[in-house]
Image (cartoon, rainbow, N blue to C red):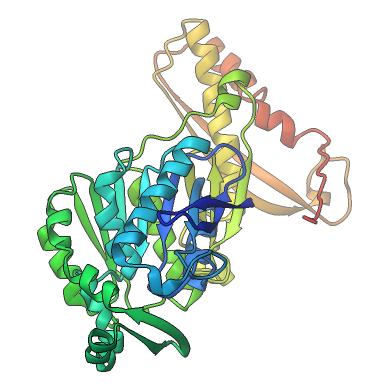
Length: 407
């Protein structure tokens, strides 16, 4: 995977710093991510979620709002409206340079901004919020003791998460004007609301209000035990897993020109740790997403097939497909093929036809059942064809594996 860093012009003319997380190979979809209030594109939650989504084939653009991170401008000059406008500008940039975002994701106040911006991004099909307030004015609770001074003096410096920020009266005036629930009711896009029941910054009642106001299709996922900033890696990765799986129902995968040109060219397989548990892995094969794990007895959580399970599955699928192709080509009455496989270790001395005589050998037992009105000769021929499947040939030939470390 790669991170492409660049700048684009925001609503106020300032250059906003952005990062586009790109998957290996052609993206299945593009997404836009909005970070939390006074945060930035490189906060742990933003980076972990976007990188994890890229590992699942989704390219994600995240950027620093005005005056934050590496973006130009003064934070004091920004408002909720300007943040919404900058999100639309970011979508415009993606549309002009890559492809418009089909997925919109917002964390905390960024979630509220995403909901407000969604109607202005026509290509967006799916909107996901994480710990979002139902009213943008909720953020003023972070500095409520300064509200009177801000209104009287016009501008006051406040401390948020240990850092100084200047808040102006214009920010307060702007934020109270937004009727976010009208945007939610008229969303006309699939909505996923994610929230932790123990969030002590933005209460779970906010998620309830957003969910009740939205029209179907809508979904709610509880981020059990997660804090507001998703500071634990497993919480951010879980959010990415859910978003990727959920959005797949509403977003049509982008066609890969390279794959279309090459026809039967092999696809790249990307395997990445999810860090949900000791052995849990996410496997990306083009638009497909699979989970691998180890059995409980081996120290895993049995959340998915193990490495040897996938090996056997590949051989079994290839065997059945090869037999089907031959049967159809020869018009054989083969109704169904069932291949059952098992992997084990045996002593080399117990294998009379094996060249290796010492130590242990890997053995795969493959049992093939053929349903249909086949005669003995046809069954015999199909069994011969089974040994000619490409995966069988690969496993029984000399294999060269080239391993390189990423620079």
